[in-house]
Image 1 (cartoon, helix red, strand yellow):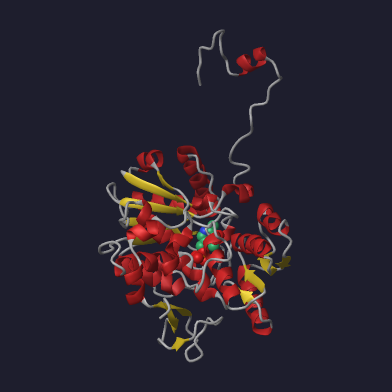
Image 2 (cartoon, helix red, strand yellow):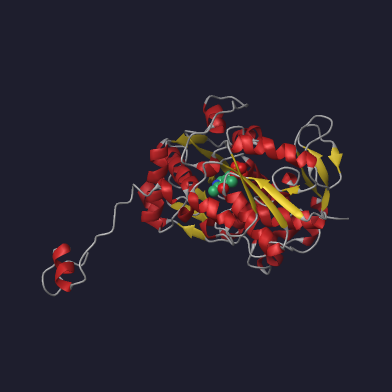
Length: 416
Ligand SMILES: *Cc1c(COP(=O)(O)O)cnc(C)c1O
């Protein structure tokens, strides 16, 4: 028997073959991958995983592909950084940063989901790949498609950061800039996907694509020495990443790789686009779509596909959600950079800002083993911080000038 059993409707439970489909024809619920855990359990062990490749593919037994990875062999297995300085600043004894700013090849967590999506798309016989993107997804699809020699279309909103636009063009896919926001892009792509037999990674390939996010949970557990954290803080756009980190932790328990998971799952959004966090704070289990207006463009989805499931996942674990202003996003980026030397994009500022809020509210406590997911690189969103970092000290090229500028006497004196 294969490790993948079927695609299963998350609402009514109807099962489908593992093809390029994503909605239930009976109830229109979203489909997800159903695994044969009994068989996987006999095949998996900590030792086997530890002797696997230094990439997310060391968890291939829990990923929805049939053969070996044919696209994105180096994605994942990014550093887990013990954040002593930031922890001390916030009053946390054991804080970790899961650092996907250095993911391969396009410096965001999207390299994980795309590696799975394109490997699966190839197995299903597709030659053209496409996506609707808030920025990072397009970069990753474009890069992986170039390396895999696949035809590629990426659809992006009209107001993306310069580095994210360039980060598509350099790989020479068809870059389609849509006059509208992500939700307009996504609607258009759903129509196109109905007409053209392409692998849209976050539409008809979404059940497979989304599973790639679980590897962040697997790595977290392994890198913490085979234990689940007490608290995690996760940025939310569609909400998919959050639901899959929960699923990944659950699978580690199901397979007997760790004991009972008690991790509290916390979600983070920016105030200018916080349909999920707002619903949570108002005690609703449904969200109201919004028109996004925030510098955290990678998270700017006003009508989040997995919003409902993210609310449910957080509530089930006893976690919380919150949101931060654009000013707090910038402060969060600076705080992480200046305490830990990690330059995150705006989504990282959202995560750090919300982490700080949850600590202040006493929701995350001093002794909690806490992991904050930093999902994208700051060099891609320089516009957000360019006016908040000052300028270099400019001097004439002479020793005298240098020492005068820094008010130093002869033989040093000041060491700062
Ligand atoms: C896409 C993205 C996310 C989260 O995406 P979901 O749609 O919620 O899975 C988080 N951070 C960054 C930087 C992203 O690009």
